[in-house]
Image (cartoon, rainbow over all chains, first blue to last red; front, side, top):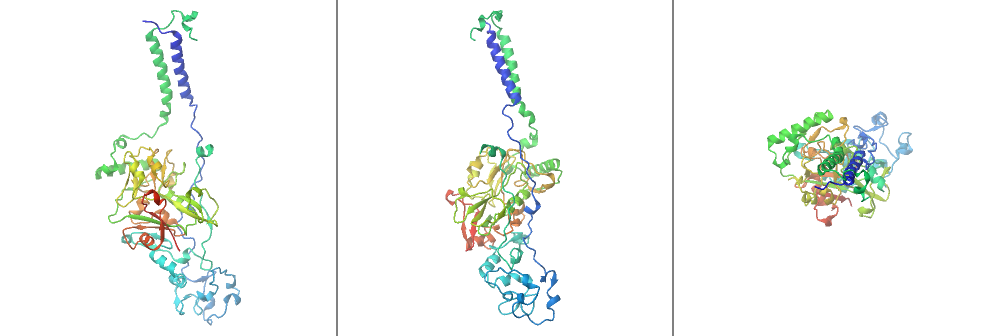
Length: 192
Length: 310
């Protein structure tokens, strides 16, 4: 048997030891670490509506009756009469008259076309006076929020009235701050 | 260098074959050991029961119960939370559908964050099922959309199109899975068995909606934020190296509730219900509204519809 030349043995062993060294020191490394990410904020998953629906007609925290009790029915434009309601900003399209919605004789209610009162709890009937197609969509579920159960057997959905989302005096949906966008992976960021 | 044998220190002129093999074997072992050393950092090796667990569809009721108990125990150990772990079955006569009013969506991303919270997605690295695209008005080109927008929304001249899993009737992701770890349930929801997924990510490549996400690292969820109401096929904590996706909040919707994204949407743009019920919200939307599906031409037949008011 011919002996193996010593340099061949040395070269083989040396190669393997160099390889072992390379693997052990992990030349490639683990890449960039994770970024610090802020935790989820409760307001970004809070299912509350954007507005609070009052349970009774109030003005500045006082019931309507505290001023209007026993008074004659309102006439003319209330904004020009008192010091209370003139600050109300009305940006409801062409609908610029208080008594298109509010009841002249009974300020705790709204007014239907024929002067019949509409209760605050039925406010959608008031909005339906002009927004008939939206009211139709709201009734069959294509407009407006629904929460609770989709399954009628489990209780069915809870509908949300118009004024839980729209300010009746300024009904366009207000702009809000967007929740944070998707985080960019550090590796992807380095490449670009 | 090839004159080695002639060098004076060559002595006997070489080494014996046995000595050579021994030296090479020893150094090769050292190199292999060094190469395998990253394995010492692997801590989440599966337990024996986990390793031997059958595919979800082949589990007997008793085996399923044992699996749920094992997972609940693991959750208790990892997060200190007593999990209400269940496996709700599909409801007969129900096919879920989703409709989204792109005329009303303002792009506030609350759906994205409510989804992360409800479905126990990893917070860091961040993983989200819903991507909201900011689209120029008059354009339906998703390639020119922007999803990193910030600040006040809605911005004038733009509309917003959230995209998530479309729960397709002809789902390409199901077709490509080599191990059948993802499938379509009778109520239309496409689910993943996280214990069967091998992490090949073929489904992610196949999905035309970018609806699937991969856990490149072990998902990190703060213990206090874990949603304890979890189901096997949806929001239980996922291991590293598996794919996950929107399941229409199966743990909620199979109990009759709305998904988290529907509950949280401040504009009421999101509609959910039973496609087989002609009076449900989605059926009414499809019947009465202008409806379209995203990438209709790829033939996936989504159960997710975009609509707008006229």
